[in-house]
Image (tube, rainbow, N blue to C red; front, side):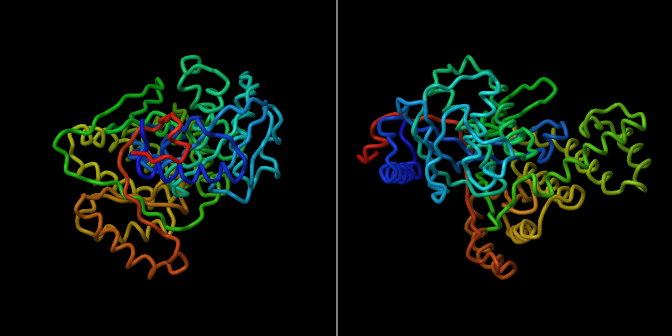
Length: 424
């Protein structure tokens, strides 16, 4: 399989960095992992809701080749100042230590730490060079990187894919961030990247941890996914409003349990009568916590409408629900940020924009929109005109990306990827 034009450009960069840093990946393989676009329910994973989303074509490319030693050596073109990350399996810094706080190397260290803890053995080292074009904040760059590293480390050390259950990979990828790095993420990002299929929506049911693929209905209007990168730097989830919201939701579950309600997570409040009783009882004492519950409750009510609309090819309804979710995230869950909402306010005025909202962990990063194909340039022009005026501090940092639905994980083979010969 041959890479796209963007993939070929990435290979050129990787070849150059490999040469500069004396890393031998020639004749090896490239694993490409995608970004993701959540259609529902954003922030639902740690609250126990069902999930739905797609893989999108902003990627991390990792070129790798066994090096005949027991050392793992990696270089990221996105973080050149970190130089080569080099270590032996089982000999990595302690979790959440100051030593790893400011290096991207915390991800390969964390992968080795978690998988070794799970009983995997990694005697075979490899050289690797990475490059990614996933915007920071909102498109699951860290989950994409972690999935890529896990699969690469397992493959190089001859663990067959059938030996490691898919959900085991998801659990380990989450543990890298939760246990080693200290980021309190759920599993939405890992699931949507790992299971993504071209042309399909990925539906996850946490009750039985099942995955189903829902094709986009025939006759759908031609549309695009627009990623509206605000140019802001989002801190890790452990430092953001995300961690506060997660803790608040868990605390409210405990409060409701003490009051006699049978529930393990906010998603268990699915019945309207139960929802009304809880809100009526606690609104006066815990108004903000009731707002968090309101978002999750309403998002769950809209969720099946979203699935039905997607399957029917009714992208207009999908967009309308996406917009409603965004208003709920802004007003009830209170997880958005000023720059994110500026992007939403701008594109909402453009004819042909079907729905828009913030993406990802919140506070900073990117917003997203569903846009009719013929309106993409109008969206781009509106953002380029209005955003720098509203947010001059980010006038030279923002971007608009248009994406399509793609597979989450692909592997490319062959000398042509590394020798510099032309790729058709």
